[in-house]
Image (cartoon, rainbow, N blue to C red; front, side, top):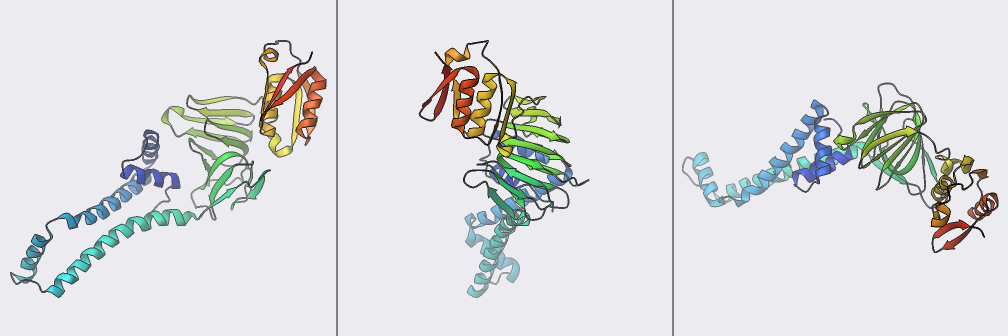
Length: 329
């Protein structure tokens, strides 16, 4: 039996209980249509589910009448004794348990065979780890990854949330696949970052090529190459050339700006320091606001703010958890 991805197992169970969402149903149908093996695996689960369910429902039948028929067929009209009835009742109960355990055991096998570990970046800072195939992963604070102790013979499959950097070992005919809530990312050997949050998936490829596939059918499949930035949201996948030179600053600790518009600097600072940072409405309307050329290397926020203040003659104030830039007088 092939390995069924954990998220597909979860959706199948919801499907059989008729509590799946429309998006989950689309994901399931797309997976089933992916290959004959997927279709066969799905049908096996459905069969086990219904067989265990029908066994559970049998006590609702007319038990006394059923025993009379059984007595007649086995004893040619001679009623069974009490001990024989007890034995058959035990056999029926055993059959019920076997049916249930068959399904539960299969699901348990699917989960245990993968021996999923969950690793989350603890506290502040990033967490660096090496996967079973030697691939490097760096998890940004708050990100998490699930992966097996040993990858299967057909694929290297992991599941991520949050922002992570991958440097994947190249293994021909052994694709590396990343699952997020809304996409599948497949590579053979490359480096890239993936940021999956509640609003979108953002993929930036540093080297190599990546197949970026949205789980919703309208998103489609796209090849993303080096120095391309792909964003998947409810509108689909949009690919552009990388303009943000600081997309790896959370790893390097370096923010580099070269004649960068002030609005882009503010966005980069907010992302790097995990704070709400913005310009006030008056400052935003100034079309001739100076660009910034500067390099900040592991500097605390206060130093960065003071340097920007001097560079382009702006001031700033703190309001609760937000920093607001405004025009100096």
